[in-house]
Amino acid sequence: MELVRYVLRRLAYAVVVVWGAFTGAFFLLYIVPGDAAGGLTLGADGGDIERMLAEQRELLGLNRPLYVQYFDALFSALRGDFGDSIYQRRPATDIFFESFGQTVQLAFLGLFLAVLLGVTLSVVIELIDWKWARELLISLPPVAVSLPPFIVALVGVQIFAFQLGWIKAFGDKTTLGLVIASLSIAVAGGGQISQLLTVNLRAALDSPYIETARNWGLSRFDLVVRHALRAASLPVVTALGTTVGVMVGGTVLTETVFSRLGVGRLIVDAVEGRDMPIVLIAVTASALIFVTVNLVVDLIYPVIDKRIRLDAR
Image (cartoon, rainbow, N blue to C red; front, top):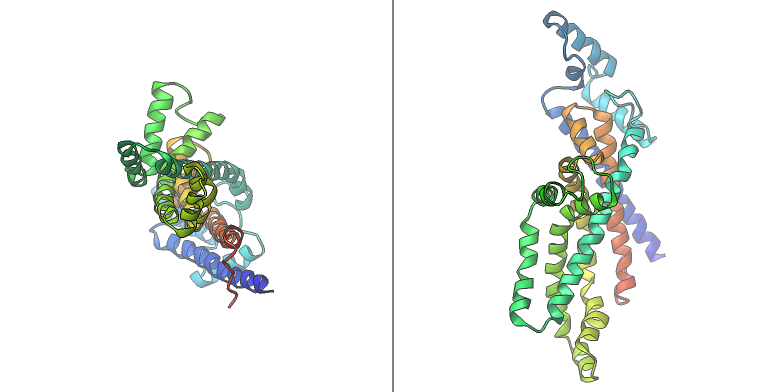
């Protein structure tokens, strides 16, 4: 029963977050100078522009009061209808989900690689005996965190496309191309995970129960991997909730660099063209992913550490 109340409370918070993202996207797009009607009148003669602008604004409903446009868009979104794309004249949801699969592949493969890189590096740091090698490895995560994803992406294109010729420089759809693009957003995430996990591993290895296990004659590998790693992983799981948001955000520039047709490029084009339906579905879906992942992460806590109980108060 406590679990049900906790989930319901978190779902209420999620509704507020998603509504805030929807509302923020709607009004921010109106703050930016220009509107979609301007893009539909490109190429018109000077004397016809004002007339065509007025016609297009009336056709799109942009001449209505702003609060009327907002509540109309909000109530339609609650029914799952975000309207038709202004430029493509097709349902915005259809256009979004055509690109969504590409972005999900990129973001979650990037997350998997980030966890793999971060955990592996932290474990190796604790297992290696050479002090100079350990100090060298400890210096890598801060460097990785400081590297912007688009810089890593540009370096990846330069090395794997132009120098090695393993992938196409533009629009590569192979598995190797996907992995290399995912590494661009995994480097910073892996560095963040490694920094956090290394600190917690050292704290766990100094705890009394690890000392007891050490006295039993367990190897250092068993102490680190089988005992300390699980105790040190809880803060890392907490960080994964925000890391997913960073991964999804990092796909925008990565998809641009690698010329991948995903949600990132879709949002950029929609914002430039003030295509409100596309922007709203993309922002709302991103917020839903973020709050869902954070809820799942919270529900995983008791599985990792039995001492943790979800507080429904």
